Length: 85
Length: 419
Image (cartoon, rainbow over all chains, first blue to last red):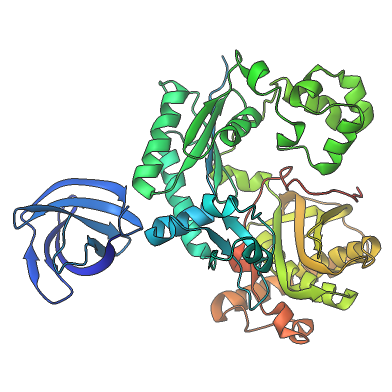
């Protein structure tokens, strides 16, 4: 089972109302730039629990999921330091 | 053309939401139960693994734990369930505006106008709710509401069942008559006395026999068993008009005398009255659901000659009804008060010489009190009777109410009834 980690996210609000995450600050303060958002859909976070708007993103060449639930962002973490898929 | 009705039922809703939020619970027996400290210590719902230990909804947490020592108990989080309920409903509303909620975890939908087969829509909804929200639903697809509801119970979890004109005799008729939403214990017993055990038995019985057994319900039940149920799906925003308003509470300790009952009736009346006034409604019928410490529910109702809305009128009528029907054969665990026979509060009505003016005064007083509570909180002004036993009456049912449509007030053991 994964850990649910709430993270700080810098996001861009487009004039059309879309919210795109730009950068994530991990628990230990490390910053990760979001290279690309490849998919956005509502989905359950089956590993860490809960649900939200799921952003499939590429960070440092790796694909991972970032969830936006009401007004918070979270990541499913496999107890490593970095957000992983 | 036949209608296409779906009934969507969230399987073991509270427990599913808890397990969806905390995946570590998924492979363990889990029940959601009230706070034991305030003695709302009963099982509200259980997951599949807990159900395998024969744990039943409504039993005490203490007895559930005897059946299953590893049982995990999670206190209820009603605001979360409301949130999930809203998310489910939002998905349903993408398919049709005709969505009628029934409690937090069930809804009917009328998808007759959708240009797709209803079964395909049902499959899509089932998949989406599982993938998007992480909980499962079972869906019944049929040509009326009653059969659609039977369908959602037929196969679960995470399944779709279709009861069509072609297969209902084969699939619905063998089901026990108890499975019908309208049939409670006492109706089932009356039918069993005439060897009518299944829905098919009722469908094939003569309407006049059923009328002699059940009164005007008899022919209606006969029609329903034959698939002739024309009740429309009433969408959320309109359904308020068709509902009763009720509030109930399991009390922190058993109620043992009239004064206890009066205190609880007063708290509940406060909430029912406030909600009536908010929706500018008044009602004629006072309903009382009493659950004793054996968990047997008794239902009583009385219809008045006039409509009421004020807290003190509701409390007075409910308490009068209570005193006339309940004689403390057993201590009580919970009381629910409902007002039905609703009408808009500006509907012209027959006044009488003395009472009407007094009633009007009480209603205006209540509105003033509601205004104060709106601005300064629920406890800023309270009735003296509620200060006698704060442990018993220190809850606000107003915040945690569930609205149920009239006529579906549950499969209760209706041993009384006064109209």
